[in-house]
Image (cartoon, rainbow, N blue to C red):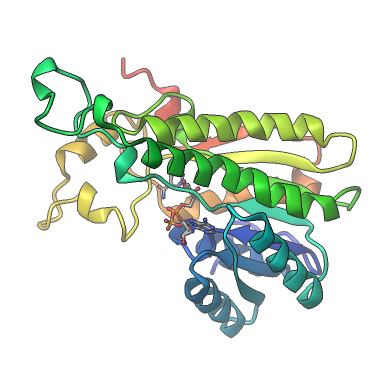
Length: 281
Ligand code: NAD
């Protein structure tokens, strides 16, 4: 993988949760290019291990671990295994997160005639809402509780959370995911302040709309023309296009690199082509 610029994280131990997934597997591969030892954690052990093996094949140092970010014992077991393999954590990337259809409305706006015709706000499933809040918020808080204990007063110690542009202004249909990511932005600021006396910086990236294999069917018709949702997204993105996931890497490296961002603490950086800055007028 070609990095936008080089930073040296040789001998640093970087823990990435959600590293079986689309964005965080790419983050892990980018981090490995800096010389760091990368621990890829995921509920999907097979995916974490396969992504780690691909990094090793490319000459990096990486290992995959099973880890449920919602179970403290599971995170502690991963921490112990990483300690034996690589040493204590220097940088934690809290990437595990996501939405759930049970916490999503069918329509953008509520109309009375929608009642009993489709899934409205009134039909949102409490367990779906809990799932989304737990995965995004507790799934960031619990790994931080476990790994930050080893990060105190380590040079270059840093936590990077993954928020979203829906944290600034909620997107239609996804109240729980938007609320949970707003909570992540808030928690990022809280942690930055809380850990400021023990030398752990905490910042977040707020990705905008990115095309991936998973969402490309929602965004483009079979003939490659944009769907109605895509047209709306692009109309509200001043740069007139989707992001490419590699465009997140520069911000990630900047936040990880002590030399570049040593006085940056508690920020949430949008990488969204101007989406969150645009009022639509
Ligand atoms: P993804 O679904 O591809 O990856 C998420 C990974 O998290 C999966 O591998 C999944 O197995 C893992 N996971 C789920 N529950 C877990 C648990 N309990 N314990 C451990 N791992 C668990 O998602 P992605 O698109 O790569 O997103 C990564 C992060 O970026 C998420 O926090 C997401 O909310 C955020 N984000 C993504 C986008 C986007 O456009 N893809 C935009 C904004 C924010």
